[in-house]
Amino acid sequence: MKSTCGCSYHDYCSGCGYCTNCCRCCGGVTGPQGEPGFPGRPGATGATGADGADGADGATGATGADGEDGVTGPTGLTGPTGPTGPILQPFLNSNIKGTQIIANGDAVTFPALGEAPGEWYARGIDYDGTDTFTIRYPGLYSLNCVLSLDTTQGNNTFYIELNGSSAVAGTANKNDIGQIVLTRVGYFAEGTTIRIVNGSGHPVTLSNATANSSSTGHLALFRFADDGLD
Image (cartoon, rainbow, N blue to C red; front, top):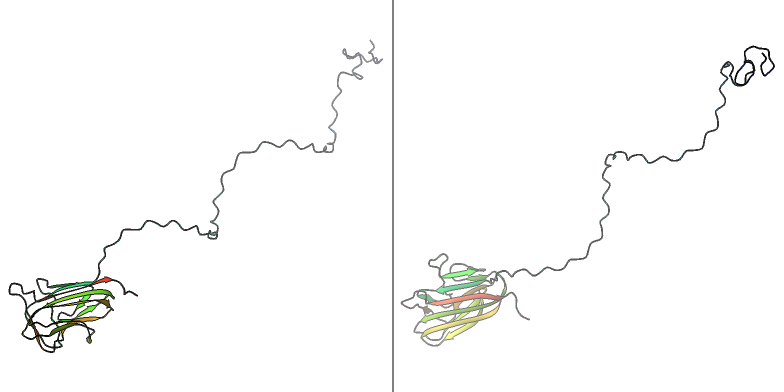
């Protein structure tokens, strides 16, 4: 039997009718592998893939340098006025006690420092413990002094002595007995010294009432303004 290809080879393919040497359906024996071909050209770039997950936070960097100061903001509103504190001016209040014989040119004496019960009291005015007061705070002061006389000589005069020499506010009593009142309103500088002095030209006796040993006289001195007027 001949195959379709005309060969007398007895083996032939039933699928195509050719002998097995010329068969178009059956493959032949695999030959040895050829040399690798040259690489093909790179294909086109594929589409961008989806974003990956966020990585972990990095370490904190060093603190940067301070920036320049900003512009100063506007001044705030003024707050309400606070409460007024206590007002206290320098003052002196003293009794004049017991019988005193005041020689001409001498000063009236006042109770000693620490005498009890208190016969004098002062704040902001110094006292030497005998007859002299010293101003510590300058300002306008009011001074009033009352003296009780017990004498048989008339023309009795007392005055306020400032700084050991200046005589001001002299007051006279032409009767044998009675009272003399000295009054002074004026500016006293810091360090001014004050005494109540006999200027009668003769000794004068000051005396208290029998029932009150502190009734020989009285002195009140206080500051009522910080400074003098124009």
